[in-house]
Length: 168
Figure (cartoon, rainbow, N blue to C red):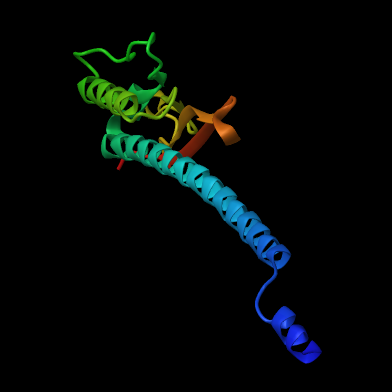
């Protein structure tokens, strides 16, 4: 009879073993949930960076397509209180590019996004008679406010795109 009692106690799980297995499973699932939250935050950050990159490259391409009038893009600032600096008579394409860029940035849904453009001569102005390649250094900067982990604070970030443009 003693032999049968030993066999019965060794079969199956005890309540303690089941609780330990449940605790291990719970801790593992909580760890996976934490990874999921980090993954979602990184995906949102990546989406912002992709959008910002597209906006910066788009403005560089707009300027390159109007390479005879690069200086018309100097001092663009899409901050809400700053109007586009171009005039409607002499700088129509640059003005339209500035307004369209401002509209696209505003509609993007990226928190606090704004863009600036500077265009500066590298070589002497060709109208002075000095031999020149007439190259211009163009810097496009897109700045935005990114939420930090957990969304508790906001950090200002920026992406800068620099190119040298020379008229054909």
